[in-house]
Image (tube, rainbow, N blue to C red; front, top):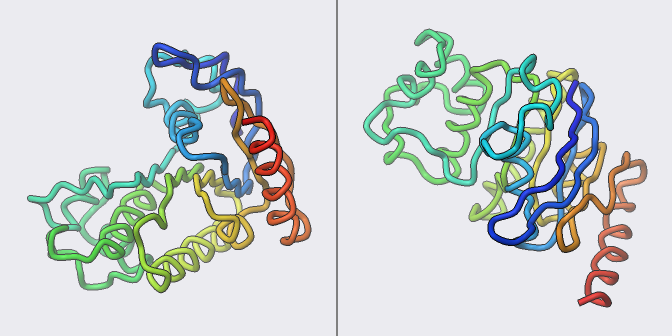
Length: 223
């Protein structure tokens, strides 16, 4: 589905080192690592938003539909939710269907500023779904949400993935509980420059806590 052959990325100093990995259909990857290590940089490279990364470094992207849920919802504030979704090429009826999928039926004529942060994230997720993505990229989708809203959004994303088993996902998070609920694979990014220190399937959910403990202990020992 997708093959990463990223040689590195620097912003005056090295941030990402070599990243080699494959993503197949149905992969549900949680990408963890220390704050500021380059997780969003890697996600942007995969999405094609970083023009300094050559196209041949992310093989197969040109054949995929990619939905990207940013940390900020990035909905146009002067357009209704339906109008925001229609910008990606769906009809008004299809936009309403996508909003209903994320628990916002009847909200099509609302403006983004009329929504709570959690609802705005749901609307942005609906915009991702409107493109019928093969690959769903999520950049800390639960950040700044209270535990109830975060739990509801987590359950919603898990349900969407279960209903679309061929869809792949990469979710940047700091929380091992997110990986336990959403992931069947774990990536752990660390180092200077950052590389994938772990890239494997998850079996026992308890492995997440055990693995994160070991990796973070190693990180502290090396600092």
